[in-house]
Amino acid sequence: MTNIDTVIPEDFNLVTAKEMDGLLKAVDTEMTGVWPEFMLHDTVANQHWVRLYSDFPEYQFALFDKKSGKMAAAGNCIPLLWDEYPENLPNEGWDWTVRTGFSNKSEEVQPNAVSALSIAVSHEYRGRKLSGCMVEIMKEIGRKKGLGTLLAPVRPSLKPNYPLIPMEKYMNWKNAEGLPFDPWLRVHVRSGGKIAGVCGASMTIPGSLKDWEEWTGMEFPGSGRYIVEGALVPVEINTDPRTGIYIEPNVWVVHRIH
Image: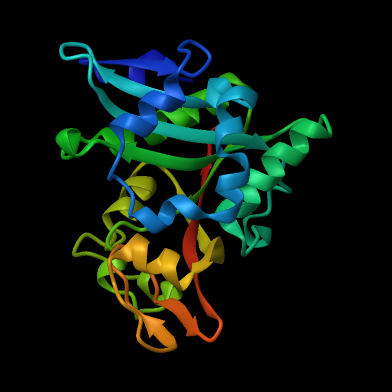
C-alpha cells in the first residue's frame, strides 16, 4: 500500500479539478499543441469531455512546477464498472470507457475500476519521466477510491511512424531488453500493466472533407486511404460524398491495483 504523495515528484504539486476551479480552462490553454488537431474531434469526447470536470472532479488532475508555477502535465480518468475479464474488454476502447463511466454514474452503479483517458505532458517537461508518474497517480486515485483496477486504452507513442503496420503486430514488437518496442507501452509494462489486446475502434473521428483539410493542412484530391501526420492508421477519405473518417486502434493495458 502506497500513498499518493509518495508518487509525486518533489518539484511538483498535484492539483485536482475538485481543488481548483478553472482547471479545464488551464489545461486547454497550457496543453495546446500536445495532440494533433484531428484528435480533438472524437464524437464521444465532444459530447462528454467538459462534464468530466464537473461530474468526476477528483479524477481530473494536473502537476504544477513548484518553482515556476507552470503546468507540467495533465491527466484525465474516469471510474466505471467492468466484468474483470481482460479478454472481454471491448473493441470500442476509449469511447466505451467514457460512455460506460457516465452511464454508470447516471444509473448509480458502483464502479470497480478506473480508466485512463488522457495523459499529456508539456513539451517543456518531456524527458523527466512524468508520464510514468502520471500512471502511478491514476493508480493511487483508484486505490484511494477502493477500486481494484486501472484500465488504459493506450495510444502507442511511436505508432504514427508505422501507420501501415497492424496494431496487433506492432504491440508485440520488442526491444533488446524484451520489453515493448513502443515507449508508451513500455512505461505501462514497467509500471506493472499487462497488455490485454487491441481495441480496434477505440476512437471514431468523422468530419467533412473541409474539416479534414483544415485539421491536417493537406489536400485530398481523390477517395482513398491517406497517411496523416500523427495518425496511427490511415484516414479514409471519400470525395463523393465529401467526408472523411478516422477510426483509431489503441491497446488495452490492465493494471491491478488492489
